[in-house]
Image 1: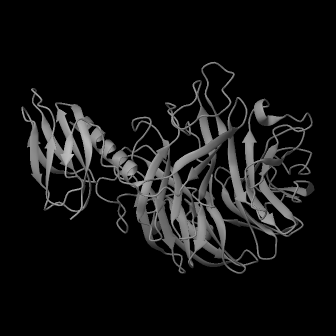
Image 2: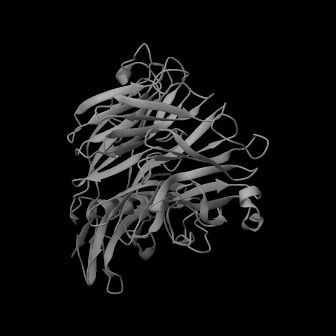
Image 3: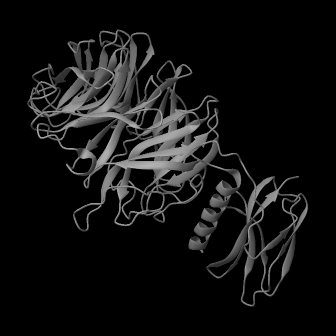
Amino acid sequence: MRYLQEIIITSLLLLQISCFGQASIIWQTCFGTSYDDYFTDAIHTSDEGFLTSLFYSGIDGDANPDDTIIYPARVIKFDSDFNIQWQKGYGGSDGYNNFIKIIQITEGYFFTGYSSSTDGDFGGTTGGRDFSIIKTDFEGNKIWGKCYGSEQDDFIQSAILTSDNGVLITGRSNHEGGDIPFHYGDGTTPDAILMKVDSLGEIEWVKVVGGTGYDSPLGDPIEIVENVYQVHIYSSSNDYDLNGTDSIGELKRWIININELGEIIDENCLSATNDFLRFDGHTYFKNNETMVVGVGNPESELFPADEGHMFDEGAIAFFDADLKLNNMKQYGGSNKDLLYATAWDENNNYYFIGTSSSLDYDLPNNYNGGENKDYWLLKTDSLFNKVWSMNFGGSYQFGDLNGKELICKLIHTNNVLYFFGMCMVTDTLPDNDIDCGHISTLPGFVFSDAWLVAFDITVDPIVDTHIDSGILIYPNPTSDNVTIEMEKISEESELVIYSALGYRVFSSDYTGLSSVVVDTDTFSDGLYLIVISSYKKIICSAPLIIQH
């Protein structure tokens, strides 16, 4: 019976979307090689074009290998119609290079990321993998490039432009030496690193924050007022900068405000398990509060999810001027869901991107039967009430991420929503929503391509009550009685009407009948699903609309 109920709920949610409208894919394209490839960032540029950074792990396909650069950090510049204007790779004769943030400035761009090249565009590392930054003009021509870090691997998290046209970089390191002045602990866990460079890339200051536990920035730093920056840090430390936080629990979200010198001027610490969880979702400062997109605990005491929602929920958390969690919205279903990034339109409708393996509640479908993750696109109004929700992606058995970290960007402009992410490229295309990609040259292996998808978000709500399902329903919409007619079924059968949340609001034995009259006067206005079933098989279904 549970299997039948899941089918009914899924069918109902699909009918909700088909009756009331949602985004639709208008075009898509893929970039990459026959190995793993993905977008890392994208911005809408001042000339109304688009600039993206991406990583290719192969040297065929779109890679156009340069004999002098091994695994370069790549960028592609598009015009407003997504015609390629230029593309470049930056790196050296060895190592790996990747950009994770693009920053537009008045004279060109800053690209920030990491490099392990010992020569080339970044001038060589201090040791291992370093933070890196390169400044270019508007055509991508390098003006200067630099690396920063310790004598071993350091990991960049994010970067933003500061008020004085420098760059604030956040990351983590297990080591000291080079540009990292010291390290807490024995080197087995990282400290959070905050680094400020000027407009020429020269280091102004480096701050090591945290304790002897695990400390790493979450999301993006944000400027909340001029020369005051907020950083969220995941921490398991209880000493040094987090001395006295034992009572909060082992895992914490530590929020700090720093001034232009990197000095902590305000801070707060809260549990990373009770309400809003640890996750590297994007961070925004809007309407004088911090909005963080990520993952929530459906059993939160402060802001619980609706009944029936389980595991992880896609969440939007709001932090006030005192750095306290003052609101949180949760969306999802009875399986694992998360949100990662957002964009908004001129009417302050919000669009959120994430992944989900749920089949119910806020999720209309799952291409893998709830066994793995699809991409999830959610629209809310300005008050964060759900408007519609949709799955998209492919049918790869290990999900649209294949166990990898979600890296993506949403950009809204001119009534189109652009998704910059990745897709798993199977041997057979199209694969559900995926109709492009470079197929692996290794038999039995499936890899990803950088996937660019354009969604039309101007679809007007429509209502189509005529569905050829074998059921005759009249009147529909109805405000009083409704007659449901279907040919007689000899085997034992049942007629059930489900609400928009999947609850039974009416049921009747339909064995041997050809029609039933139902009084809907006590039903609330909205969309319902009529289902006639026998044992575990749905014989037919159709929507019913009630309008008093």
